[in-house]
Amino acid sequence: MAQVKNSYETVMLISNTLGDEGIAAMVERFKGIIEQNATIDNIDEWGKRRLAYPINDESEGYYVLVDFTSDPTFPAELDRLYKITDGVLRTLIIKKEA
Image (cartoon, rainbow, N blue to C red; front, top):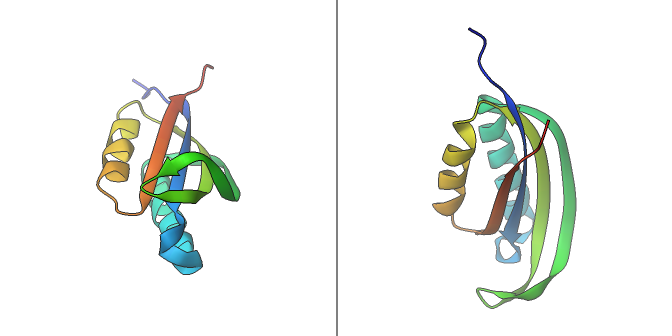
């Protein structure tokens, strides 16, 4: 039986305190994790943006949007990895409707 694949969208907000190299390394790291477990459809780096309210005393963050297709179990694992990674301020994973 063919495995079910769903479309997802994830946004990560990365801390500016990592510096440009640290941010680039973090983006590459998560890109690699997603590529190992899913098919990346699109990556859109929004770059540094001012936050609506301070998070951990930071007023700016680096936003990255990734559209990917994976089996239904992967987003939970991705969310777990986000939560245990220093430098990730906020994340959101949304299942897109077909």
